[in-house]
Length: 166
Ligand code: ADP
Image (cartoon, rainbow, N blue to C red; front, side, top):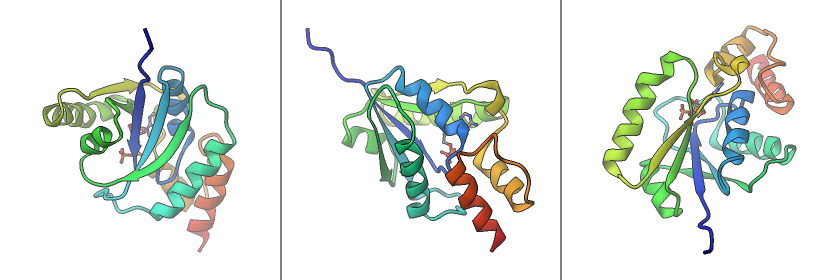
């Protein structure tokens, strides 16, 4: 019997991409047959990097790494479940960090299930060293010229430093 390809969507803001995002991506790539990184266009969050900048950073970081399945980068607006359906995907990947993520992610996963019961959210936990890492924390540290080498890929580190030096 031909095996059905399991395509997963990894949605987020990626403002900017961090080693935490890449950790989740690597774990997901080891499970699924293809992953679409879906960069949110209509996030209620005010972003530091424009959509184009966030995509460009993701693209160059992904290009430098090897993953066990194909990874593509796209953008979406509106409900992520509608976007997943349009792309023929039934899996949403989300990262789960410390307890603080749980309430919001749980709420969102159940609301998404209410909208589309055939789409499942899969949570993956990052390496411990990224459990307290977020793009917003990285931006905050960059703003004060702190050390981020362990947390951001070099190109994102450069971009974030440039952003806050101007
Ligand atoms: P969003 O606005 O959708 O939360 P983010 O870019 O902040 O967008 O995060 C996208 C996804 O990546 C989320 O599921 C988030 O939990 C996950 N993520 C972000 N940083 C980390 C990290 N350090 N470890 C694990 N998952 C992470």
